[in-house]
Length: 286
Image 1 (tube, rainbow, N blue to C red):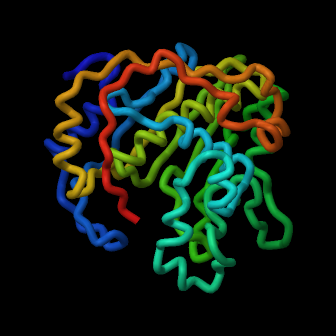
Image 2: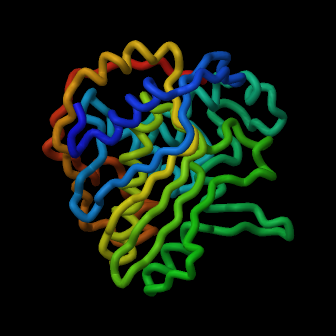
Image 3: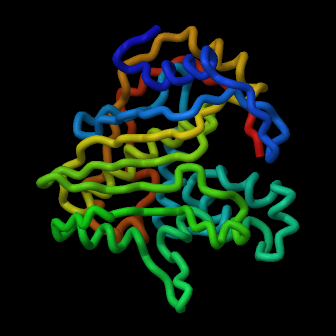
């Protein structure tokens, strides 16, 4: 099964062969778990890391990241962009439903994009992390701290979910931009299928709006796991041979952060040459 494009499948196989069963208190389910995995995605070669051993719905993944870059905190806004990924955590998470900071139906609280675009300062006001990054990179500046962090420990109690992929650091070498993304926890059958193309898209779109060339994404997964009710489905998926990855086409008219904040939709992105096996419906743990 191992080939040039099987790093996702190789990781899932490693979990099955080497993983340890861990009880997850939040979901009440056991996870087969490994610690530390490092994956690379070649944005310069436009090898879009969309899983091919089953069908993956890339538009929803891009819509979610676009919502983060807009600082959205409401599942309804994400639905308007074309993804329902936040419906369950906003409306079916019992702990969040009873949280006094929840503002009502579809509210997600201060998670992900809210932190990226409006990190609250203790002395008042907020910090727009992504805007600072875009401004610096546009001017050829890399202060070794072009970091987009969603992990605000002091406000965990004000959101429906702690961030899983919590940090993205951009690095500039000459006119080529690189991205290191760190993920504390990854549901490999479901989460990784979203997160890999999201990191690729984040580097590609940031390079485009800052006028830079895109290099590679380096994606670190700290805790990679497969839930017990996903295991047999994954074993079936791993019998399939991966195909050559597809390519991502981005509307060249997207030239600024303001464009991303205003008129851009998932229709401004296209995936071509996507060859894949049949879909597999994995259960989702809230």
